[in-house]
Amino acid sequence: MQQKRLRVVVLASGRGSNFAALLAAQQRGELPIDIRALLSDKATAPALDIARDAGIDAIALRPRDHADRAAFDQALFARVVDFHPDLVVLAGYMRVIDAAVVDAWRGRMINIHPSLLPQYPGLHTHQRALDANDVMHGASVHFVTAELDGGPVIAQAQLPILAGDNADSLAARLLPLEHRLLIVTVKLLAQGKIALQGNRVACDDQILAAPLLLDESGSLKQR
Image (cartoon, rainbow, N blue to C red; front, side, top):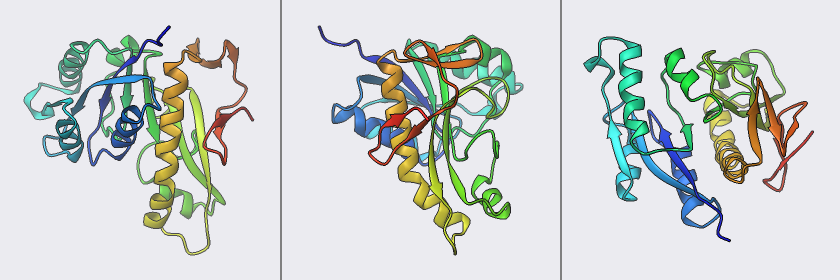
């Protein structure tokens, strides 16, 4: 019996490298998903061009055309609903989403963030890790809640900080791990192996004591 494909809508504000990674994984048959649309708050976002080139619906809404953040988010997610997604993926989406909208998608919306959460929510994560003299950096995929980058973490990828690293070099080395982390996490979600139970992440119906970790083979394992 053929597995049902998970319907996915992606939100992105910029270049769309994580979106492109998901799309490529879908196209090569690695992910049992159907990316229905790419939505953005930036009409010039390169991610929109990636979607258009792949024949995927690409939609941009301008925040300034709406009375406030809540009104914009309601309008944006009204368009999201048009595509009947099982999962919404925030992949470089740079706006904080209104709490009421987030609550309506609880357990069905994830975000990828370039830090080892709960360290460094928000912006400039690479420089903040360097400024703190951290020895490890990384990325996290988490369920989205109203708290900025504060939802339960599903999985993480770790990267050692090297002598001579700057924010740009650290970001460049982390990016391929971000891509892989997002792909394998979405795959587990598509397979029905990951779920949000209360405020905890469950894998195969067992509550995780810690986020899953991306190993050297590119798979996720329990710590």
